Image (cartoon, rainbow, N blue to C red; front, side, top):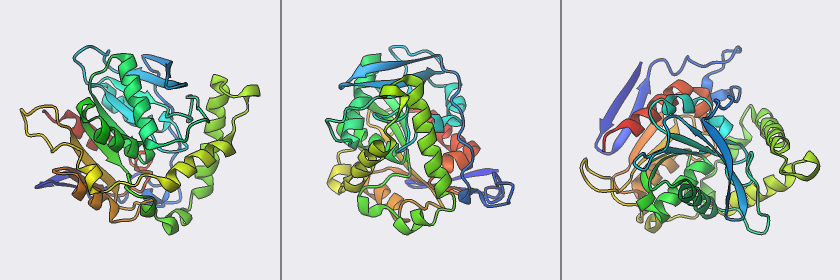
Length: 312
């Protein structure tokens, strides 16, 4: 059973079953496992958008886009693709138009090696795709690097944001928990999976000469970005408008989420980000690590869907 407790601006989730669900055949707790990567559901349509000197792959799910709809845009983590949202899309797309994006250089999207990767650049790509599709405002779900991109969008383009859910974000490279990352039991599986899926998707869309993907170059570019970004302060987070009251204007609402067994980001970081965003909310999801959307997809989807469904 999922319990939802709200106290002022802090949202905390508890469940008695989270400690025993989604365990592997070796009876490991879910936060110590990396379940299989889901497949993307069959989209209504998918295409490459020619924006910012790249080809940005995206797929549309759920109800059709109209002038008045506010879709949910999914922004994935570093070195993976939108495929990792395969569990979440069916839950959201029954109600909302959903747009899955492969971030620049990731998955099926192309890259422009002449410019450095950055969260600001990813944010610009997302806004450009919204313009390309005729979308005025969107709801955002961001995970890891995608969470940082969603925060960058909310800082730079708050008028384009209805609300944003971020999971596993950080505000400084110093927030990374290096001992935690080095201690991940499934680290080798994670890297092998990232590489094989990257190369498979690049071959499928023919973005690399001879069908060969430059995995080492790709990783170097992503890790160079992560080593230097983000570097946000309270002043940067102060650019995010205050949490709206029902009936107010277009100011976005931000929910900062993390797993209670987060191993990639230091434990204080979600609360610190929450504290720097006026009237934001904080959700600690039990039984999950940085890879929670795979470890307990039912709970993750329930929390995101409930947040996105709240009336304005």
